[in-house]
Amino acid sequence: EQESMARLKKLMTIMDSMNDKELDSLDGERLFTRQTGRIQRVARGAGVSIREVNELLAQYKKFAQMVKKMGGIKGLFKGGDMSKNVNPSQMAKLNQQMAKMMDPRVLQQMGGMQGLQGMMRQFQQGAAGKFGNMFGNMDR
Image (cartoon, rainbow, N blue to C red; front, side, top):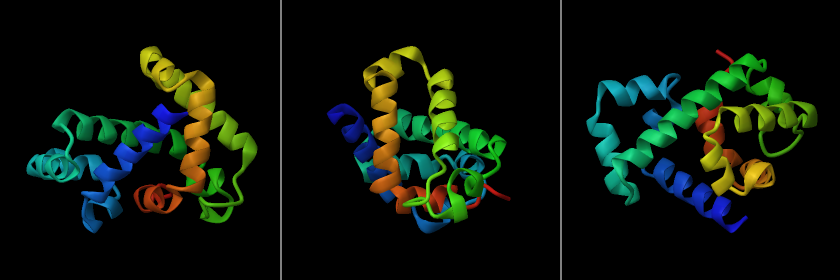
C-alpha cells in the first residue's frame, strides 16, 4: 500500500511539472514526442529521470486506449465525475485489463491485484481532479 501511494505521488509530481496545454492535450503523447524538450523540462521540474516521464506517458497511452475501448471516460465514471458515481463493474473490468497489460514484475512490486486495486481507489479519491484533466477528453 505504501509503495503504491509513493508511486502515485511520484506520478502526480510529474504531472504537477506539466503545463495546462500538456495536461489538456487530446494527444499528449504526440505533443511530447514532437517536442522532446518538454520531456526534459518536466523531468527536471519533477526531479525524476527522463525514463520515468516516458513511463508515465506510455502508461497514459495504454490507459487512454483501454478507457476508449470501454466506452470512454463517461462509461467508466457515470456522468464523467471521477470522484464519485464510479461504475463498479467497469472499474473491476479496468483493473483486470490493467493487470493483464502490465509487466508482471511491476504488478508484483505494486502488491499484486490488491495493490493495483488500492491504487485505483486512491486514484478515485485523491487524484481524480489531476487525472481528470488528462483523461477528460477521452470521449472524443
